[in-house]
Amino acid sequence: MTIAIEIARLPHGAGLPLPSYATPGAAGLDVVAAEDVDLAPGQRHAVATGFRLAIPDGYEIQVRPRSGLAFKHGISVPNTPGTIDSDYRGELKILLINHGAEPFAIRRGERIAQLVPAAVTRADFAEVDVLADTDRGHGGFGSTGR
Image (tube, rainbow, N blue to C red; front, side, top):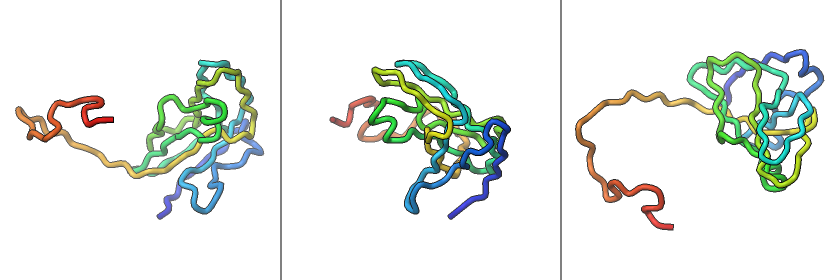
């Protein structure tokens, strides 16, 4: 299944590739940086991509880290997965954090994250006085074992 997503390039995105799938089996579209940024250890930065999107109603785009950057350098998306809502029309920026021990240079045109379009399921909450019990009950973090 595919959906159509409108994309508008901004002036500082000129000459950069649009988000694209690296392989036929890829789930995420690679997105590149539209600016140069040096991330110190522990630093966060919203990296410009040079474009805006019009995501169809009923969909979101999830922003996920690139596994190679995370494994090799500790570069990640701190709110993984990040969500871009269908009613947002500003520039797409990728919030990155350097969890590594060394500064990391992000350069214009470098792949920095993956975008995964996803259908959104909306919820209506029904307030009740009592919830049905389960075997797990009130067991929280780690309650089902290691």
